[in-house]
Image 1 (cartoon, helix red, strand yellow):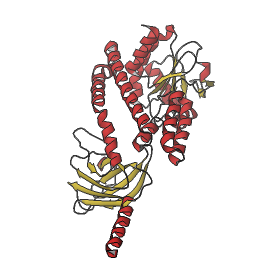
Image 2 (cartoon, helix red, strand yellow):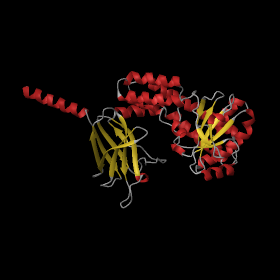
Image 3 (cartoon, one colour):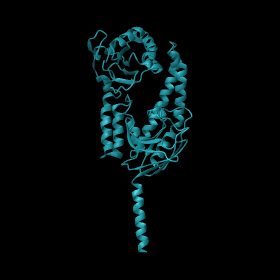
Length: 395
């Protein structure tokens, strides 16, 4: 009996240790022995390599320990022999890793590539409760996201592509833009409700955190404070909570309904002027960021020319801010595009103060300001801008 009890205790101790680490047993169809597999931690901003192994007999294996469940990537490097490793040769899959036995099964001929394409399939991942929770949440919004994707394709076909040729199907574009914004609003509210109901969930924590990681903060200060209070319920006293509060405080500087930040930039004549000297009290303004080398930016300018003609006398002011580091290219593009409204330049490009302040990671990018200089909305492009100006000016 004593020996049985000892054996049981040893078994329990082994089980406890097993729960305190993760294992990933990978099984791949279409693989070649010797191909490298990378385990990467991702916080949605940066990727941190954790471990590397190689495929043997179509299998790979990782083990380790985590303090919390976290999003990771498995990357299979299929770079041909003799060539330098490149993302274009990678197959990849994101998933929540946690301390449990996990299996990863995939067919490399159909697995997501690093840049996803149509008809690709995810790996089959079993053993992570956090990943199961994440999939359940995504599935709850699958129908709405499918509708949104269909509307987006319709928008591209009926509004965006014709606009690049100078054909503005404004009425149709506004209809589609409004439908997309309504769906985006429903998805956003469903996500917020999920966070409210699951304050201790790592999935909910990450969904809340994502609000602060993009180029624009689509929340006002009150909504940011609400998220902080929700996350506090599940994470107070942890590094996760401290990090979340820091991101939230930074986000408040560019949140909806906050005053725009003023900076001195260069005019085409080489003079330094403050943005505030070009913003007219009592009128709506738009800070529009672009560059001569940016194809999508140049594609948007004919629409801005049309907007300027229609609304400048009604009191709508466009202020374009170029991120060109080459002065000659900036001035040449302005002339070619017929940009007759106020023009400024940040010669340090993405490293300039205004770019850093607004976390501008890509262009075109636009910020709409109300008559008091408060941020109304971001990403003001195409028919979204048409719809907003129609609401404001009624024509």
